[in-house]
Image 1 (cartoon, one colour):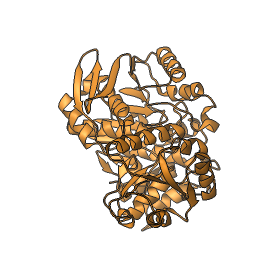
Image 2 (tube, one colour):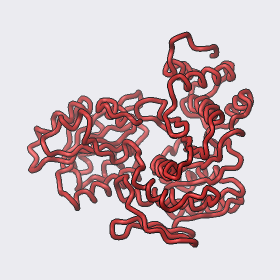
Image 3 (cartoon, one colour):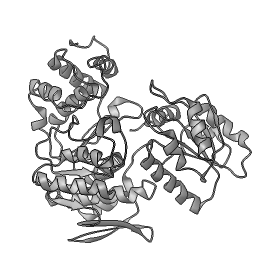
Image 4 (tube, helix red, strand yellow):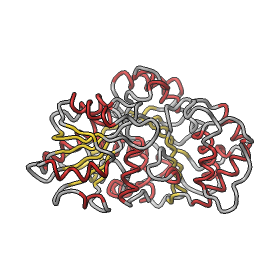
Length: 441
């Protein structure tokens, strides 16, 4: 399908059209994208210096920390992340600002014409449009987040990145990446490039062994958590050390103990690229300014908190796999240590995710759960969420959407104002942020 967009149409209309170019939503390959990039004049060869980030959990938070630190050092930063929460435009930041509708529509139309109706996945063609935009606006760094896997991901067209990063690897997307954590790590390791530092976050041993072996084979200098660098919390501070320095830093603004690791990975990445010259003061400022919506986000502002009993808290996290649930449950436990409150979950998940594995992490923590069905064709029925919660020993009931669930919290007869957590799906998180009228900005 080709041709330009009719006058007055928006990027959203072009995006809707591009979704019909390939029968599969995910089809990992680089051949189609390389063809299209060639037709566009190879924008991937004209980009600002790239930091390429892969991993199962923590990619987005790590990118958020990197962006905040770089911007605190007065660097102009492009960023490419996925998926979006409320609107596609969030995926593309040009010199710090979400791409405008006009600029995005123009790039998508140009990319559509160059594709000339050939089969290509939605992620591939939109990645090509993003690379086109990044190649045409000056910046000091491009933060490029892998969509899925690494080796065959559409972002893996960068020949010599400043650095490559692999955040924690866990079991997810096994239908595309393989059944074992070693298989998945092997796919993530496909982004390593000769001469580019390979920054590796804390990993399970099978994943770490694969990543280290792949980096050595690729000729990528290793910068591994627990070996070349260390990050931990001490006295309410983030303590980072490597062979050159010891940094005593503030605890990250993003909440949860897992953010200590993500922040440490971001610090390690910048330390592995001395040519950027990012001073400790900018790292410190970035830790305090980083923002990443739907990751243990406190929705104290906006419309939704007013639906809860007086004194209640409302939190949002898009975690959707077992490792994500571990991180969220740990963060909730940390809050419970400070201010005890009964925890109420509002959970919705996709059929591709294990509701049982996810909700088992909240056994003994959650007082009650509402099962909802998030938007989209692949949504798991609310009844299955309830069954999974019951199997985890959590009393639960179905609700017709998160708004109904929020309205029913007051009827639970809890002993104190609750801590309500909406979780299980980024699709659900996006719907919540839109209803709260607090989309990413």
